[in-house]
Each structure stands twice: as structure tokens, then as C-alpha cells.
Image (cartoon, rainbow, N blue to C red):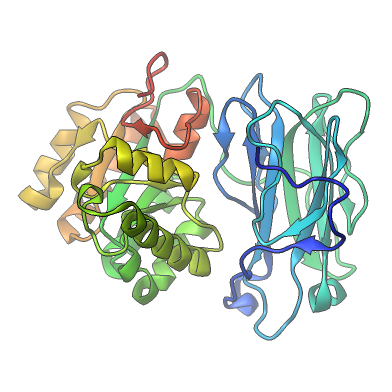
Length: 386
């Protein structure tokens, strides 16, 4: 059981350091995600975007951090949850998970606070969805939620404002997914490649779409701006090994190193580590899945292979998608080639016109039953997700 237990040594359980970015341009933001019972982890949400459970599910674990922390300013975003039957757990910070991920014990209340110089310059506001309504905004270590009455939390929103500024707007921002409408996941491998990746992100942003980017770890530092932009647009960051080697040709230790280094590189820039991994070349075996499972990661394949890397022909890539797409598909492309960006400029608006929602792999999984670490998924149909 992943659990931060009340009564452990006092203090804050620390994780990674928050990302430092150009705070003057973008402002300090909260980023956070929830683990929903029988569904899994949500995607990472950013500053007053709605993180809410699918119907019939509820929150059992939580993690959060900050993005765009002013350089040289000390402090973190800390958080504490009240779990039914366990009480208040220890404070955690920097994307450390607090709560449970393998038991049905619900989170009933939440507290958050900034520390260090962040606390002197900013306020953190938060609200929970409980009893079919959002709680009033609370801030700076006040309690959001009602305990010991059997009321589960099924949604969270968090926002950071300048000290003593206005509280955030009540209407939650960010993408809202309609589970009754068709949806697909556009995925991009082998990048990032700043010029091409940015073209693809332009198209996604202008059409209200999101993608999942399975990145090669040694390419991440040189293309950091693209990785930051993925996170800012609520796209999903994924893992594609550190140097594009096959999992089936690595030892268990080699897989841990390659996947771990990639996760570290992505987390240091995006503020969140990947929870999904795409095996290079699509090659995997049970041993590699077992290693991924022990790292808390699922493997993601595809149901439509555009072969864009081979044809380098926008028309063929477009046809591969639009002639075959179905609800629940995971579509494979690569953000290395300008011809792929050319195709995406046609594919995305056409899918939108056909009524498809373009969501991340984790969002698609949330809508269709969730994912389990150590398992492999290639599509998420309404009745079949493996």
C-alpha cells in the first residue's frame, strides 16, 4: 500500500524540487493530480483547472507541486489529506503521493500551505467537490472538506495568487471531457524536436485538443521549452527510454536506469514525471512489464500506426488516421518530421469536426476503466481496453 501514515515523524515528506521557470512571464502556478478509486491517476492539472473523478469514483490519493517558482525564492507547496479510518496523514510536498492507491479508503478533507519565502509572497487557495457541490475557497492551511461523516471527495481545484490578492474565480478553468462523446488519444514519439513539436502544439492549442508525447530522455534538456509548453497546455508527458533502445535488449537494471533517467529529465523541466511508457519499436516482454510495474508505470502501444516515419507523406498520414479512426483509438505519430506536423494541421480540425475529443492517454483511460501499472494498453474501447 502506498500510504503516508498519521503519527509518523513530524515534518514534511519531501519529493523533487519544484521547477524554476520564467515566473515574471507566466506567474507561479500550482500543479496537481489525484488518484481515483478503480480508475488510477488523473492527468496533471494546473492552477484552477478541474481535477474530478469519473462517475462512481472518488479521491484516495493526491500529489501537488508548483511551477514557475521565482529563481532564488525559497519554499514549497505542502499538502495534507484526511483519509477515512486513518485520520490526518503527514504533510507532503513536491509531488510525493499522500493517501492510498491500493485500498478504497476515501480522502475526506484537504489542507495546503506554502512554505518559506513563497508563503510571504503568495497565498494558496483550494476547493473540493463533496456532496455534489464545490466547497468555498479556503486558503493557507484551512481545512477544505467535511470529515467523519462518510462524505468522499471527488474533485479538487487549486490556485496560487499573490499575497492578499483577490481569490480565484469560482468557475473552474481547463478542459472538460464529455464521457458520452467519442474520444481518441493522439500520441507522438521520439521527440521532442522544438520546431516540429511546437507546430504540433500550436494545432492542439488552437483546436482545444491535447496530445501525449513519449519523449526520448536525452533529447529533453535541449528542447526544454517544448516540454514546458506541453505541460502548460495540459498535454501528457510520457517516457520512450533515454536513448531509444529496446526494452527487450536491456537488463532489468538497464530498464530502470533508462526509464528513470528519462523520468528525471522530464520532471526537472515539466514539474511532473511520466507515468506512461511506450516501448521503443513496440517491443516488450513480461520481464520488462514487471520492471515498469514496479516503477508504477503502464506501457502504451497503439491501435493506429500512421507509419509517418516511413512514408514522410502528409497525405498518407492523414489517410491512415481519417480513414480508420474509431472511438477509443490510440494513434501513433512522431514529432520529428515536418511532414507529420503538416498532417496534424489537417487531422486535428477534421477530427474535431467529426465530434471527436482529442484527449491524453490517461484521460482516455480514466473514461474507460483506468490503467494498472505493469500492464500494456493499445486502445480504450467502451467494453475493451487492452
